[in-house]
Image 1 (spheres, helix red, strand yellow):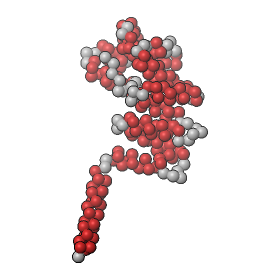
Image 2: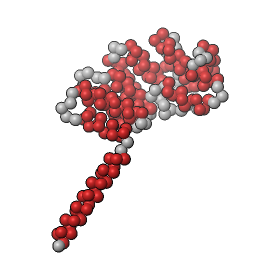
Image 3: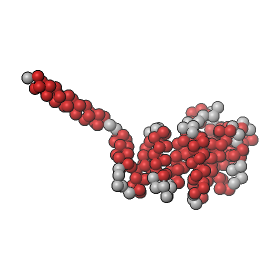
Image 4: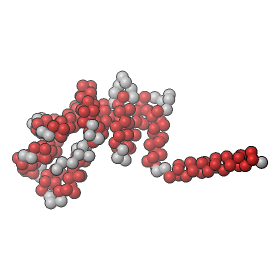
Length: 217
């Protein structure tokens, strides 16, 4: 009799846990479900390097969009080095962006230096050098690394951002005045000239990938 009751109790608990599991799965958001599937694909044995790298790249993008920068940095690291013989340098750059936003400047700079040693893509090299100069300037409190880029033709499309950032770091109004005079339609110039500066200044960090978490007073 006692054995029968114990058996009934076990069955009741088994049903309870089964129903609880179903409920938890039902509460999973589409994003969580996608991430879970990608994690499984990225780490499944026997899959090709290309399939695994693609899964890690998508994980990095999704984690970044969801605001989980720690997991994003991990995913970009896996994407970059999933094939030890052929690094994914774009993934390495994205890793540096995430690490910068997390305040891990030294590790971000290490990633950028590794990238610059290997890349043959001029556009990626420019992006990496720009991020490096910003990290060095924010880290040191001196804008000299950014000032060096102002006269480099490769960084001509970054000039509004350069003038704005140099002004904010150095406090030298000549950079602000040059920004407003030469690039009056740029988002940076509008932030300087429009009254609702605080609201717009947060949006400016979309122009500075990897530095979204840093505020300049």
